[in-house]
Structure formats: structure tokens, C-alpha cells
Amino acid sequence: MSMMRSLKTTGAALTLLVAALPCAGADFFLKDGDKVVMMGDSITEQHMYSSYIEAWSLTRFPAWDMRFVNVGIGGDGAPGGNNRFKRDVLPYAPTAMTVDFGMNDAGGDYNNFMVSLQGIADQAKAADIRVAWCSPQACENPEDKLAIATAGNRNLEKFSEGVKQTAAANGNALFIDQFHPFLAVIDKARPANPKNRIGGGDQVHPGPPGQTLMAATILKGMNFPALVASVEINAASRKVVQNRNCTIDGLTVSPDGKIEFKQKDNALPFFPEEAKSILQWVPILEEMNDYRLKVTGLKVGQYEVRLGGVKVAEYSAAELAAGVNLAPAVLTTGPIADQVKVAWAAIHAKNQYFHDKIFRGVMLAGGIPEFMEIKPEMVEAKREAVFKERMGRMPELFEAIRKTLIMQSHQVEIIPIQKSGDRNT
Image (cartoon, rainbow, N blue to C red; front, side):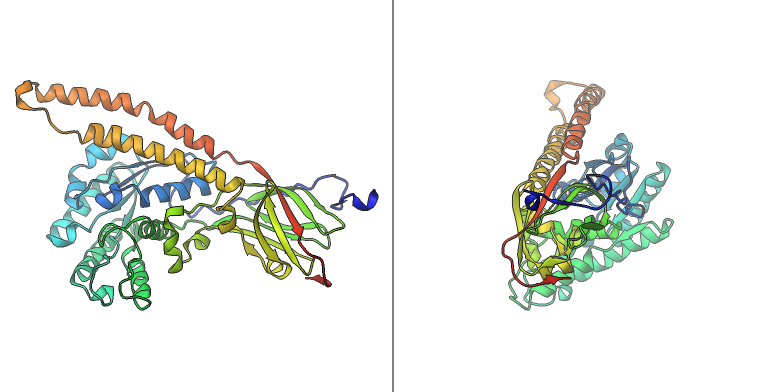
């Protein structure tokens, strides 16, 4: 009976609680309490890269109160953004915003583009809004040659430089170069097959793979922390060697080599399932999600990792001793995958409501036919009333997202599949 009993961690307490170290977020562009407006053209209005940025930020900092709205308009450019700033940005009282123009502007007047960007900068400064200036991404033109060799991308590069100059001219504001990273991945894929298109969608509007690349590039430019959580255990000494951004409770090591403990993380990993084709060119999932497990002192053999009773992965003792990134595994199955899916659904529901019922449904709703003989001021009064009414539902939708991000403890099991050899340190 005693041989079957788990060997507890040394110390008087029956459980081990190791204090979590805070996730490094001090340098991240976005902050707790931020209200974020995301402005741009049709690529922004598609609600892909903007929703991915939102989901990554909220899952990495689930205890923070950050609220995002998207005011992208198809066909828009910097002049439009400048002209509609008061209408489409200020009503949401943002503390931070992203500006992503250039794709439509690149076929027009460069000086007008620069003047309009400065107009946006001036209005943002007056309202005390931090701005992340994002260049347009590169186009996936059909020509069978290096992407930069196309006239369209050469022109986009010029306009991207204009965005950089605007950021530098306004207090060294944050500039994020999307153009060259996107271009580099296009050119990486071409040698394998000249017809490869990395982004999905069309040559201008990326689908989920390309917009995931956009989101990751923007977040990296914002100093987004990759760390989700990290745990190191020495099975031989039955000790937690290190834990970051999580707490570990109740570590046990059984005589048969089974390890068990409860882990409560301060963050979640995220990656959009529909974007997996981008991973053959860029390891975004693991670059953006470091969910680390390291176990030394194990006997040679294979080990099954379970989370909440669900098998999520299998590794050798040598792999575990070196340390593994569990992010791809836990986003595939188990309680973390389930929680992330629910959070993503809540984010999508909020964004769908805002776009359909508020931004397109009220702010951009068309005029009134002349035969109705309604005065313009009556229309605007009604628009304002409906805007206020529908905005009244937004706190409920933000709260629905917050509830999905309440962190839970999970039982972690590391179970030997076979026994052989000596201990492997």
C-alpha cells in the first residue's frame, strides 16, 4: 500500500505553491485599460488581422481590461481617415489606435498621402491617443518573379517609407513595417513553386494566412511578449525548479514515474485555426506562443502529457529534458483549446455586432430619399439616438469576452508509456 502512495515534495506542507512571476508586458505598446481603435481600408474592415491582434492581446493578458473597435472602410485611404477622424475615432474615447493606410493611396498623390497622415497625427496628438503607424503589406502579384520586382510593390515600398517618416516626425511614434516581412515570405515561397500564394484571398486582400502574418508582424512591432507560461520540474528531486507566469500546486512523483501537479496560468496561447497554411513558411504559432514544459531526471522512455485528463502530446525523456513548447498541442485538444475557442467566438460576436449594427449599420448608413421630405438635422438626431442605444450593448459584449478569459487550474499528468534504461538528466 505504501509503495503505491505518491512521494510528496519535500517540506512540511502537503502541497507546493510556487509564486508566479509576472508576464513581461511592461514594454508592450498596449496597456491595461486601453481603448483601441483600429483604422484602415478594406483589409482592416475584413476584421481578420484586427481580430487576431485583439485575440492575441486579450489571451496574453486576460486580467487586463482592453477594448477594441474596428473602423476600417473599404476603398478608404489616408485622406479619408483624416477627414473622418472626428466621426469615426473620437466617439470611442480611445487611448491607443492603429493606422493602416497605403494600399489604396499608392496609386495616387504621394504629397496628399503625407499631408493626410500628418492630419491624422495632429488629431491623435490633440486627443492624447498613442498611435502605431502600420505600413501596408506587400501585394501577391501574379508575375512569376521576385515580389519586389513588380511596379505595384515598388510603389508600395515608397508609401511605406512615407508612413515611417510620419512616425518619426511625430515624437518618434511607433512605426511597424509590414511591407518587408510580408515581401520576404512571398519570396521564400516562390522558389518552391512560382505559383505559391502565401496569404490566401486575392493579391491585395489576404485571407486568414496572410492576415495572421500581418497580425503577428504588428504585434512583434508592439513588443508583444511571446511567453504564455513556463515550468521546469526535476523528477529525481521531486522539485519545481522554475515557473514563470503560472502557479504550480501539489506536485507528486509516483514510484512508477508518473508526475502530477495542478497548474494555473496567467495567460493563454492563441492561433487562428483557419491560418495554418502559413506555418509552412513562418513558424508563427510557436514564435508567438511560448508555452514551455521542461522535465529533467526522467527515466529513458516515452511520456504522455495529459491536461485535464486529455492526452495532448507525447514526448521522449530526452525531449522533455531539453524543454518542449506545448502551444501547438494544447491549442489542438483539451481544456485550453476549448477555452480559447469560446473566447474567440465571443470576440467574433462582439466585432460582428459592432460592424453590422453600429459602424455600418448606423454611422455609415445611407441617406434618406428626397420624397420622404425629412430634414438632414432630423436624420442626424435619429442617427445619434440609435448610435447611443446600440452602443449601450457593447459593455455586455465586452463583459462576455472577459468571462471567457477567467483562468482555471488544470491537472497536468506526465505519464511513462514504457520503462527502460537509466535516468536521463
